[in-house]
Length: 130
Image (tube, rainbow, N blue to C red; front, side):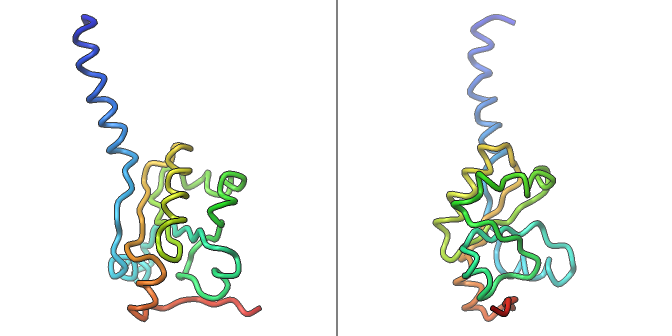
């Protein structure tokens, strides 16, 4: 292969990598349906422990976004599975998604509207007594 051919392929490879690690949106109704059918992806709640205790989506794992780098080992076994990330409104989930993409996680989704929309739709939450 000639150098000029290789140079032409590089942008295609970079584009392919970007597409593979792109975070997609999942709608709350789709996620609720998956939960009800017991086919839910891994749910990652990146809010604080206190927010999580006040109410979280059934089956969610709580790792606050600012602790994700130090606790990434907890998610290692899920690296090839779909992970839906959510927080209160989206900012912390976006940060968490970048961390996970940089660590090689490829199947990332963002819950549209996050917990605010979930609550507005009156979808079920699990609370932990404190």
